[in-house]
Picture 1 (spheres, helix red, strand yellow):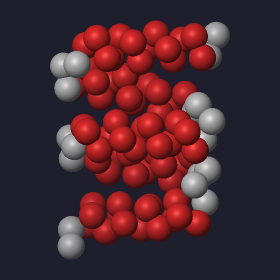
Picture 2 (spheres, rainbow, N blue to C red; picture 1 turned 90 degrees about the vertical axis):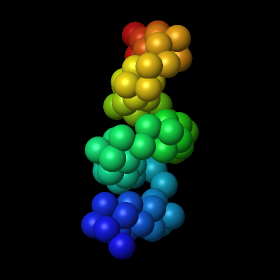
Picture 3 (tube, rainbow, N blue to C red; picture 1 turned 90 degrees about the horizontal axis):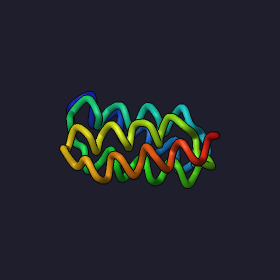
Picture 4 (cartoon, rainbow, N blue to C red; picture 1 turned 180 degrees about the vertical axis):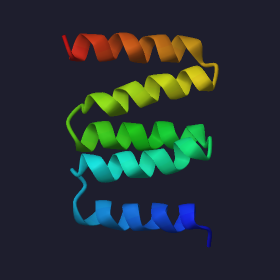
Length: 87
């Protein structure tokens, strides 16, 4: 098993113990962002948003990830929604 896969497994285990830990969610998201596994990043961001009650960083990464996927309408919608949440 590669180190990034090992790290992801550890982060998932940690989240099973405390799903509200934003730092662990962010670390898990970073593993897949670095690997450019963007569908996984979106999935993690969605789970993190739900678990951490709309933490800004996860909305931001979700929007940026849609941009990298060239899903510009989804990116724009995500960024607009983020702005309305955090005015």
